[in-house]
Amino acid sequence: MPRVAVAPLLLPPLDPNAAERLQRQLYRHLRAAILEGRLKVGSCLPGSRSLAAHCEVSRNTVIAAIDQLAAEGYVESRRGSGTRIAVPPASPAAVTRPDETKETGGRAISQLARQLESWDAPPSRGSLLPLAPGMPALDAFPAREWSRLLARRWRRPPNELMGGYDAAGYPPLRAAIAEHLGRGRGVQAKAEQVVVVAGSQQGLDLAARVLLDPDDLVMVEDPCYGGLKGVLRACGAKPAPVPVDDAGFDPLLGERLWPAARLACVTPSHQFPSGMTMPVDRRLALIDWAARKDGWIIEDDYDSDFRYAGPPLAALQGLDGGDRTIYCGTFSKSMFPALRLGWLVVPQDLLPAFLTARRLADVAPSTLTQAAMADFMAEGLFTAHLRRMRGLYAERRQALLDAAARHLSGLAEVTAGEAGTHGIAWLPAGRDDQGIAAAAATRGLAPAPLGRYRLQPGRPGLILGYGNTPADVMDRAIRTLGRVLEGEASDQHDTPL
Image (cartoon, rainbow, N blue to C red; front, side, top):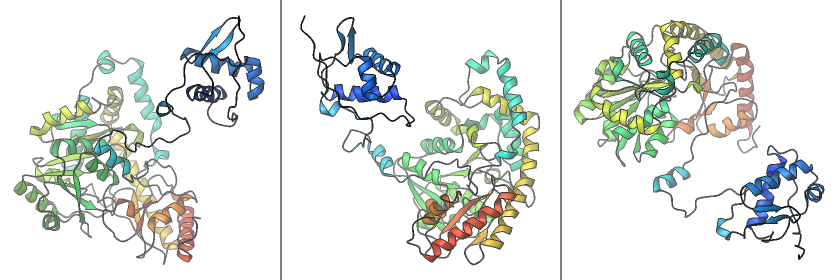
């Protein structure tokens, strides 16, 4: 029987410090050599001991890599004749190098996907660093009570919770949300009008898909929530910016600027991110606009449970009676972001369309998690938690303002509205808020640049979250931010600190 040639090997070195296991690295290198034709069909791999010595790894690592190649058909082993290469090289176009970043280039994807691919999307949220906006006080969350309710639901879950779901959401949770919104926010809604969603981002996406056609104009506040711009772009609509002033969104200005718009997305109770509150005359004017234009209002009420000067303000939806307003809210700020539960309050006649869109999105969030949240509300734990958080956030807000007065005088003007969990450090004209935010990140801080949320140029600033920044950390964080501002002011072309 003729002797089979042993394939010569020239493999990249394996990295024992890499996150990827050694056997996986060896498997990838051998597979690439086979597909690229550097290891010929019918040639033999060196024996496992020789290969282990060549790669400076254990024999078990080599055996595991070769077993994986054999399982996928790249090699075949026969007793007495070694391990042979079993497949011919692939065409160059079919070879995928693991360490290459593939760009779609001219590949066949949709026009929308190409637009999204080129969009400079904001980075993912979820920073736990000081001053990160949008993050609640995780250190004060009642984890013991929450885990008790989850454990109770998981201990003996009924079959209808494990195997069933309702696209509109778990009925007791929908009823609890409707009761909470009616009592605390003046929202006019029956439980059947509540649609439970996976956070307000999905709620905005569902509303946009139901209400908008491609190229529709949508009036949005400028600056506005960054995720809203992505939602509108994803459904082919065009954001129509309306600059906010000291009273928030101005519907009369919006109608003059964008007479063809039929949808307005607003945060009337606590404008994001500037913090203004829309007065009742503008709310009534916006409702009148929607009635005259046969239009719609999306009210994003993302954090108005936290108000420090009196009770929470009544929602715009209550003034409208729910006829033209889709009311969107979330538990991400009041509970914790990873819960991924929010809601829409939808006009009765739009429910069939919204529920169909809901089923096509992801059917429904986890019913067991919804049940635990319903229990948390029914037992009074949610109301008690909100009450504690209002007191805590009022302290942290004051700590932010006090620290800003000590360390940011002459560098920034800091404002923090009487609701929510963030303030704004307004910078002098011409300052680079995105560069400053990047420099602050190197110092362990996570303020967000206001420019990221604008559609048109405007005054620069930094969004300073105080929800997850304890008062005893705040002074040090703001002092560090002041040093960053001083360093950036001395040389705006200097490298980040």
